[in-house]
Amino acid sequence: MRYTNKFINFNIGVVIFIVLYAFLSIILGCSENVIENKKNEALLVIPEGFPPVPFPEDNPYNEAKAELGRMLFYEKRLSRNDLIPSCSHCMKQANGFSDCTPISLGYGNEPEFRNTMALSNVAYRKALFWDGRGKRIEQPAYRSLFLPYILNGDTNEIEQKLKADPIYPALFKKAFGDSAEPKAYLIGRAIATFVRTLISGNSAYDRYLRGDKKAMNESQIRGMNLFFSDRVNCSKCHSGFMFTDESFHNTGIVTHYFDRGRYYITNELSDIGKFITPTLRNVEVNAPYMHNGEISTLEEVIEHYNSGGKEFINKDTLMKPLNLSQQEKQDLLNFLKALTDWEFINNPKFSNPFH
Ligand code: HEC
Image 1: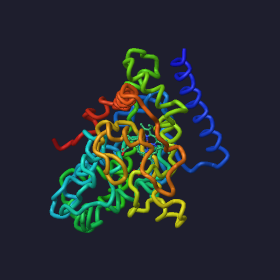
Image 2: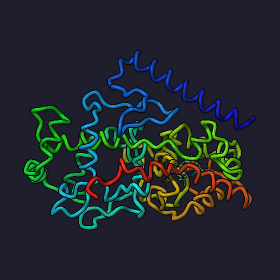
Image 3: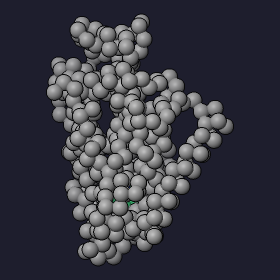
Image 4: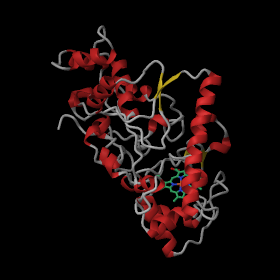
């Protein structure tokens, strides 16, 4: 009965979200065009129960653009000396379009300064990056081309290389219109369009919610009930279909926050050490964890929450010792694994087209 309730709650939640979204779009004259929830696009497929994907008005969806974006996402020639396969160097499909190192190494093994966040379902996010400083996917997609610690490219050189290529000029025309030619800002737009098609919503948990009661085993179901319980509180922050409230919290990962997180954006002392709640979809394949890659395994993450986290002045009041039994820890772990969408991780339509 309780599981049925959860299914109904989830659906009611989704319905309320869609109604509110439609309502706000009308009231605010929302400047986004929305791809309807239908399953006929080759790249963009919206799972049942997920809201429509919002695309910005100045960069609307079309299939040719998404396909071009996919090629550019994997294109080595965007990096200086054609050294690394652009975005996919740090955002690997096998890791849920994230990285398996604590801190990703970009061009010339220059480190980024935080753990790479997973790209799946990023189309729905209102705030990008761990401190929420980003708003539009187009921006990092474009800036990565020339940032020295990412691709370290020269935009003029990149444009020349693509113009001289036998296929790219035609693909840019198909994507952006007959007068278009390879331009750096269009690269950003094409990649952003592809990235917005990376929708993941077919985990065992999703199938369970859609009525396949065998999709999760007993332990995973117990873990799910713990996750959503008032005793364990995970879903207070990891909420909604994305498993994030898109808010900023301190969870006591360390006792000294050299990386001040949200504070860099707001300058509020109460924001020191706060980071955005990350999605938990595909978290199993996205190790290591947290903004600094501090925690290596999901077992250790659960121990961290069980302990209530380390002391820090801005630590969230929800962070307190949980006194989980061994079985409960195992159940929570198994539930987190039920959030892996293997179809998405292995889907050839998102993989490297040059292989
Ligand atoms: C107070 C809000 C809050 C609560 C409660 C909470 N989380 Fe989190 N969770 C976060 C934030 C914020 C981060 C990122 C923290 C950081 O990097 O400093 C995070 C990170 C994680 C990560 C790492 C994800 C990644 O990709 O790096 C996992 C796994 C996780 N939480 C699972 C859980 C589980 C399981 C529970 C319940 C036992 C829980 N969380 C409770 C806010 C919360």
